[in-house]
Length: 285
Image 1 (cartoon, rainbow, N blue to C red):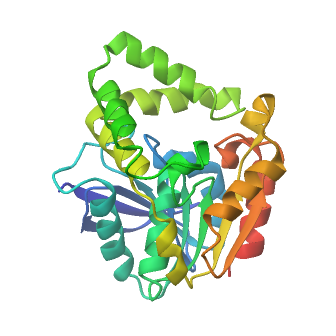
Image 2: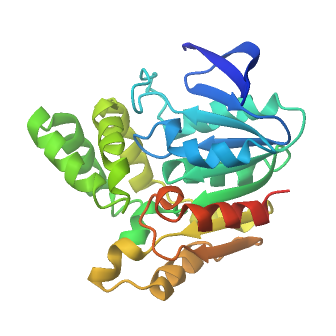
């Protein structure tokens, strides 16, 4: 465990300093009701920079960067990545004075969904940004955790064992599919290449083999799902077809609202920032 410094900033400077034992890094901005923001696979908490610039005017925003992602040191993976992150974030939230709002992107959205479902006493609402209860079924509706095991192991091995040159080429090509914001590409690629490969490989393996859909029958916490489709428009995807996929995956949940971003790729907060903030502002207390 590393000692993570929590810095509370207002626009005029430093107002508070404290410490907490977590494997993830936390930066805290603003004052008001608490929002926890969790980035996705291999992303820094800086992915929320523009979002927090607005939300911190009225809320206290806790921005996480998970261990092993971007330039953060990795943590022990002997008990898995997602289960440990869920437990650590749960313990972190449990220290708050009131239930919090979660905003999670991609892998962070998957964690937010789990936390909202399993710990409704400490999570008031959750915003899930382009994330599914089962990642693999977004690509193959017939996928199951069992049928994806071999592919997941192959993906894990490829991430861990690719040469530096091959890995950089693969990551650079992949990142360019995830956002239409050209100015953000160098930063996104940098985070990916700075991330610990073992952590990324384990996290990807777990996402590919963890089907959370059956658990949603117990979900009572209100959920807003913001979906993206535009990166697949040249491959036959439409807003309607992707929405149908989201609706199918979240069908067991009792209190879920699904909105499709107009022209965003995976990083909705970058590609359709005004729409993104409008939806969140209308949803948060």
